[in-house]
Amino acid sequence: MKVGFDNVYDHVISVDDFVLKWRFNSPAYNELPKLHLDQLKPLDKEGSRFLWDFISETRLHNDMPFKKNFFDVIDYTRIFEGNKIEIKKWLYQREIPFKKDVFLSYQPDIALIVPWKLLIKYFDDFQYADDLTVIDESLNWALLFHHEGMIYFGSNKKFVPADLVPDEDNLF
Image 1: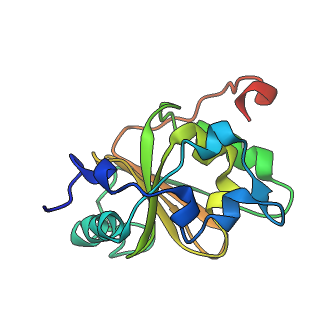
Image 2: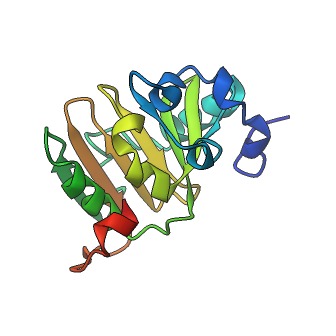
């Protein structure tokens, strides 16, 4: 059966079988609470390949960071030592619903699905020195964590960052 957004959840595997599990369950890196760990949905090779091919076929990254004219608005920020809270606020301001499942594609055989809120909370566990594309099935927006410490956000929504961010103790 061909993999698509309608059946990609059938390709979820256990976190224990996920090649990047050490980012989320290792004392040397980070140990997510069970409540959060249970919300990670790693994909098998077929599900991961589907996401990789979907992104490739749209030519999303034909230009850096995104194909010219693919999005109406592109915003960016830089990750550096000590700006973790600022990055979380920046991600929050993308105005994506917290409960929205988003698709993370690392490589042709490495991908997972997570709620947007967990991506914000643990962004530095999801992204290391690798490129990571984050999308939803509409492709009306995309996020690229570039391996050189840049984050790019493209959107077809006329995006204006919110001026107010909720109490960061509750958000993060």
